[in-house]
Length: 508
Image 1: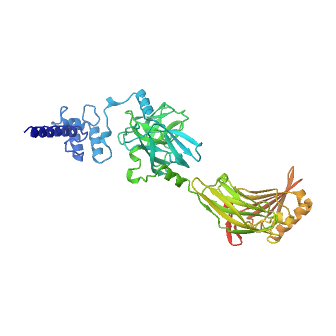
Image 2: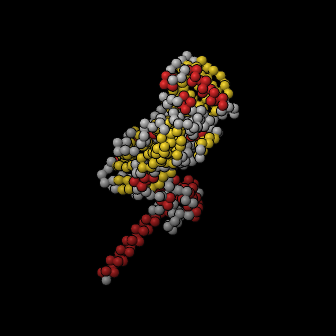
């Protein structure tokens, strides 16, 4: 009997709390456990006094009063209807009495801020930023660009670490991290905000004040994802605000600032609303190491296996890689006294193996080595140097090679953005200035080049030549000590050399 009474009492308590919870559900006017168009209709009828039973002392009145102002109006009916069609979650609504002061908002930022450090490239290369967890899963939104070449991410809180990178969108510059540990979390307001509502950001401990507004006409930095716009109260801010959370007056995150700009002397922040952050079904979680290995994946390709150069001549062998940083490459050259070899790149990202033929040899393996964080790749070009043969520059046969003509190694050899340059010390050629010029001009004439003009400069004379089709230009610079050749090749020219093709777009 006693056991039965205990079970009956428990059931009654459970029922009491359930009824209480359901009665407190904002928008559920008919108390059926869901918000529907019927609830919105009841609210609207109550607003125009067509529901005399819905009075201030009833639970239905409390559920219909969506803005907590003690009265039922058409605005409450609109809010309930929006909730019925899933445009708003009424759970996001709070009474104005729960709004925080600016000091409390500033403290909310401080309490929930996590200082995170991303290590890139090597352990000594790093940068730090503020991160904020926005849900019980430990989600943090950051710019995708922060993760470029990431190796490790640390968090300045004991027993807290980045468990995984949940989602990345390079085009939107968005990434979501998952933090594990006992960390402070910002609550979220996904739907209850509108134009005119105050919002707040934070930078370096300073509270930044703004008001939700339409995206201004003439905006250039707003992106498709940044549908939430806030007009700042001050126009002279010089801060990088990206990915600071945007809080409402209740201290809840409504979005993350992705970019900002000044339009017509007013500063605007553009944010991605929390409601539009990717959902878990779109996640593709990776550990930081897994993501790092993808970031550090390297490629190295070359269409040339072997090349033949006449002694004193030069060659340019283009190759491709997904990294264009020269310092990441090295060259293994077993006979530097016979062949000079080095890797060079241009500002536009093209990469070349530059070769200078010093002494006759056969099938010397020149290796270009690319060492990445997790792997090393190598390509090999076998180089043969002959004493007679092709007079035009190897790989760029539309330009005669002056070194082969003059039996002299170049003093400088440069592949530029749109040209190839060779400089020679006159004294080392054993030829006079006239002999150097006329021998090269004769080679140009045999190839169909025509003379354009002569320009007399203070320290040199420039002789200009062009091909018959006008696509290739060569300038011969004659100075007191040097002879300098610069060849410009039009990007549309297709160059054929032996068994491979090389487009001059590599020179861009």
